[in-house]
Every structure is written in structure tokens, then in C-alpha cells.
Image (cartoon, rainbow, N blue to C red):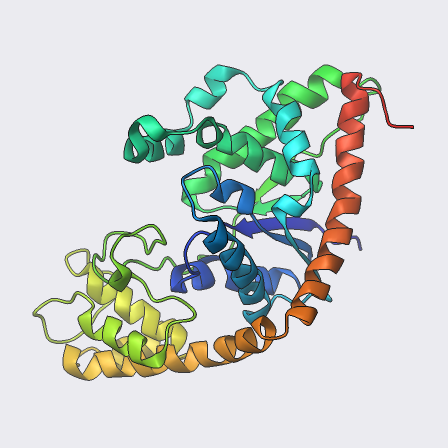
Length: 337
């Protein structure tokens, strides 16, 4: 049986946190067992906003190392860096020439992000969804794992592939570009901020105490959890809309401890915050220890990390160039001799 191909990626902006791991990367680790999995560090997306070049380079390597430390197996998955495959930029330009402006003007995330940047907003930020479409379509992905905030971007990629490429330029009825489908995973862990239980944990939150990163030290993890927002009620519970922080921290504990929601719900039903928070800190430190150990081994052995990324680049390049060439030919662009 031919395995379906899956594509995913994370921006190297800021440190990967519990929300990224539990809500996305952990699912990729499971998918690689039965799918042909491509995961990239999308550093081209990171330069759509002001950035520090030196920090970007460091974060790119750190993100790739963390993919592997979290369980992405280079023997089962293709792990690569987006900017090292020139076809991403080339396909983005071709798609720009095929995508109607009014489709882009409907994109919600640009409106939200541009408000923060004011007059400094770049064309790249406006064009971000087209670059994302290029990422997806280059690798003939069958499936793309999407969260609520990415559904609109995947729909754009699907519309470009079907309405602007296949329906207009296919000469024999065969699709030029594969139209990917969304992969709706089993209900994932939606990890909320430690400082605001109704707000998703985010790299961009200016408050460092709002998130626990995968590389936080045991002392820092303990400190952040101690400062996490709580309420005055004794006893923790799930699914009480009036107690979002209790639901979030209890959910974290159920996952990181491995005990599950049913056991944790019973054990903590009458527990005070002073007793619970040290348990959560201990479970978090324990869960992250193997990731941090493998990460440190990789980041201190650049030869091995470079070897993995070079192999991933070669695999990704082969697939990407074939897709790019098909579209160039369909659009009437002369092939290289």
C-alpha cells in the first residue's frame, strides 16, 4: 500500500513551547509511522516581519534539532530547511502571478498581524499565504495537518491548485498539481497561556511567563508554574468555563504525567493549588528531560545535525524540482537544456 504524504512545518521565531509540542509535533511523530512525512523549518516565513539575522540562523538550527529530539526520525521522515530549497521562492512567484488579488484581501491573519506593524508592514507579510501554498503544493502532499488558525490558508492552496492551475492549464485532463486535503487529527492538546486561560500559548506573547519552552531549565519551569494564574477555589476540575486556568493546568498535568484525564480528575478534585503546582512542575520537568538530553547531544554534534539536514534537503529538492518543472512547462516557460 502506498503511504499518503503529509507536510508540516514550524517557524523558527522564538523558542518551541509546550503548545507547539503537544498540539502539533507530537502528532507528527505518530504520523511518520504510517505516512510519508515531510517536515520543514519555514524560515522564509520568519523574515516577513522584522528579525535579527543571527538569531534567525540560531533558531533555525535549534528548531530542526528539536524536531528530532521530540521524536521525528530522519530514517522515517524528510527533515529540511525551507530556504535551502530554492523552489519554494520560485513557485511562490509563479503562484503570485496566478492568484487573484481579492483572494488575498480576504485573508484574516494579514489583517490581524498588520495592525501590530502599522506602516512597517511588508509585502511579504501580505503574500505569506501564497508562500505557504507553495510550501504545501511543492511536495504533492496528500494531507496537511491544520489547526483552526490555518484552515483558511489551506483552502487558499487548494483553490490555487484546482481553480487557477489544474482547470486552466492541464492539457490532458490530468492534474498538474495535487490538491491536498486537510488532515483532521484526533482531538489534540490545545495548550493555553499560563497567564491567561482563555488565550492560546504563543511564541509572540510578550510575557515570557505565559509559556514553557522545551528548553527551559527545571528551575525556570518551576518558577513559571509557581507564577501561573489560578483562582481562589479549592479543588481542580475540567471543562468549567468559569475556571479556564484550572482546566488548562489540569489538562497539562494529565498529558505530561501520563496519568490521563480520568485519573487526574479524581486525584485533584479536592486538591489545593499549593499541592498541585509542584506536581505539575515535576511532571513537566520529567517529560521534557529526554527531549532536552537528545537536543543537547545534537546541537553539540553539528556534524550529525548537518548530515541529517543535508540528506533531508536532497530528498526534498528532488520532489520539489519535479513539481516546479511540471508547472513551468504548463505555463509555457522554456525548460533548461
